[in-house]
Length: 121
Image 1 (tube, rainbow, N blue to C red):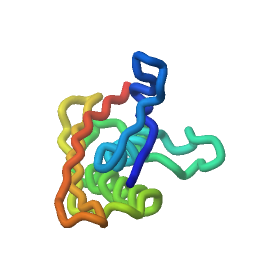
Image 2 (cartoon, one colour; image 1 turned 180 degrees about the horizontal axis):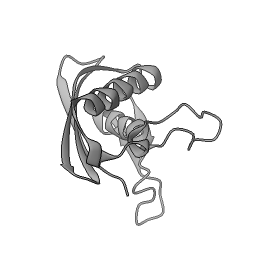
Image 3 (tube, rainbow, N blue to C red; image 1 turned 30 degrees about the horizontal axis):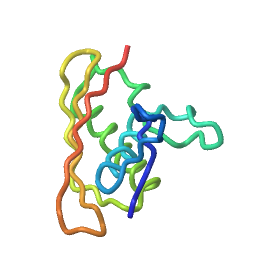
Image 4 (cartoon, one colour; image 1 turned 60 degrees about the horizontal axis):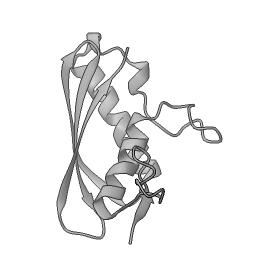
């Protein structure tokens, strides 16, 4: 069984640690990779994505390809449990990017989606 700490809601009301399991744990791991800036994780400066380095107000097909390829590379490097089927990026405004990640969890034969809104200042 796959488990991970629920970073957003670390503790329950009774003080116990909130643990995610299954696809929720996988999704949290993928969010951690996507939303962490490279060089932010002490000890592994390559962990994370380039999202925060890019300006969404210059979004075009080339920048979408660069971001998509980078996300695919980082996920393949840091999470061997998933196979990426597609990454769709949608520019919402100059500070906001919608990421729709479709993947297969290797121990299941089902296609799963993770949807993230990324905002940069």
